[in-house]
Image (cartoon, rainbow, N blue to C red; front, side, top):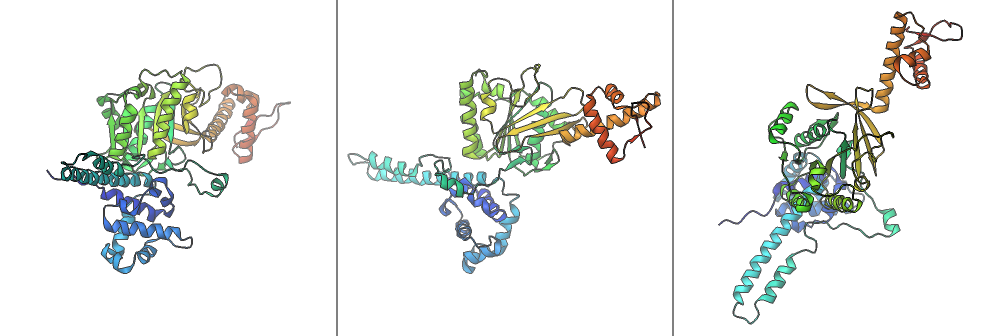
Length: 462
């Protein structure tokens, strides 16, 4: 039987290509955990070590030319020359997933180490089978090859205040720029509001390296746990959203619950298949019989899920539900069904809302390291995709101004005075809010004052 190939050439190339695109990629935890010896291909070891040496120089320009000089003419020629260096650069779409590439390289290096240790242990055992104790040294050979924390990067968890003040941390990275950052995110909303459509839209965009909500996204490999859908429904939705052949998207309609090893299987699936985004739809199905109102249970479940995100640097988007609307104003954190521990642990919470009296939907985003944001979305029935209209406040403002102009025209046709009071009554909004927008329309010249009628100030279209 032929031995399996214990390496991934694509991942090795992608690590170095990422570092050529963005030299700061070498500061990523998973890259820091790599050694040159972890690369299977010898020329990759040379190039990786040269990149590390260049990065250690504060005044060095980290580009293909400098890399060639650092490697040396003879080794560079043997490695494939400048043509191979440019091939690494051009074949890597972005540096966004360098942590994942590095994790894959490390995983295969560990497997090769295990394989070598097993061979040496078997060899030792048979050579010393007649000894009184052939087992002790055999076990030592195996133990030396097993790391203390297999599959995890060496991530610094202990700091002095001086170390933190002088440390350089990368800016938050995004799955969807300005909308979905890397981390553990929760997307919630009322039933039938369109959460799953949005999640599938994001998954398809990442799988193609396309565009979602007007944002370009880096191509990646997506695992979508569609736990409330049948294969027929998923096919129908993909077709309606214009899915093309060759999308790097894997869908599962059944998965073990959290209590039955679901998270362990998820960790293995990410490590084995190189997924760069995981979507769980929905959290309720993944939790199984867990009590979502139980604070301690949610801390355990979401805490372990967040640890998985941090250790593998793979973002997870969890689709969840909003509780029934109450008398209070909506809040993206408090509206999530169940214990507040869910939103407290997640890095980002997104809420999809259907505001009363407004045609567009609102996507509200709140997170630890990002600014609170609200976007207005519009459903496109032709493509079955959400379209981004802009920031919700500006969109609402524009709609109110449009309503004012239409009302002024309608009141004029009815022979009524278009005063701020009459306009507000006709639209059904607060007079003070309408008065502010009338002032903005006057400044822009889209509305003018008519002749006063007693104490009333009517407005007309220019």
